[in-house]
Length: 281
Image 1 (cartoon, rainbow, N blue to C red):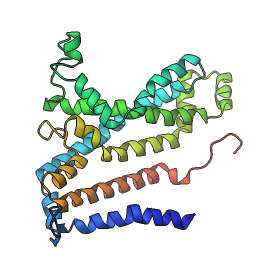
Image 2 (image 1 turned 180 degrees about the vertical axis):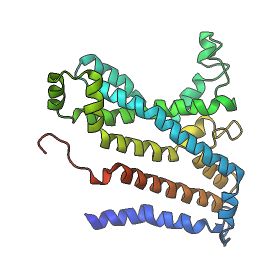
Image 3 (image 1 turned 45 degrees about the horizontal axis):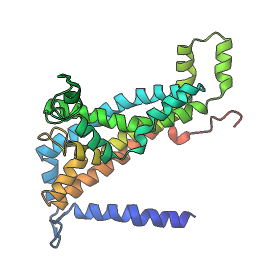
Image 4 (image 1 turned 180 degrees about the horizontal axis):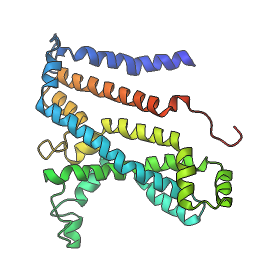
């Protein structure tokens, strides 16, 4: 089973990555014959103000997404792991965004936030009838909100599964000792969920480097360059400016940053030494 898996990985991951790396040193408009350009693509990309701004916005989106999604997902996961029936009903509502595609979510929010025909105009609430996606000061915040709305259910599911794996005897012993709900949460739930927190955080941070379809449908990187993060910058450079060399440079940067981030998070958290926490294991 190892050889087919390695062959699959080589064909669909390593070879395309090697092709992108080679293309980053070529000049190609996507139609003609690629020509050797040396490090010119790298120099133009690393000194481009647009790409620099896109890198900064990607960093902002990465950090803000984690700060918004991590605590909400953790609390919702703990809440939905309870056994009360009403929690199961609420969990169905919380997980509803999981069944929608990113494009469908973006189109729905784009319609709801329309300043003329959206939710604010329909309800007659002036505070909601703003140009949410057309104002550079508001657009990035709206994008972060829609991203959180889309991905919090998935991470909530991870935390819910993690909480259900915590041995009930730990909570029973703490209750006998008189520990409060708050103490049980910080002294039992959080430590027992440390590997789930690492996994969820890694997916949030590295996954933020792949946000494309949702933002492209919502704002296409605009207004101006207000929401033009690196994946969008890569697409626009490659398929609008027909500069596949520079687009490949951005792709290589995204891969290197994503891999480095994953390795650092695993090293710092000790997740590479994960062991079973199951009761009796």
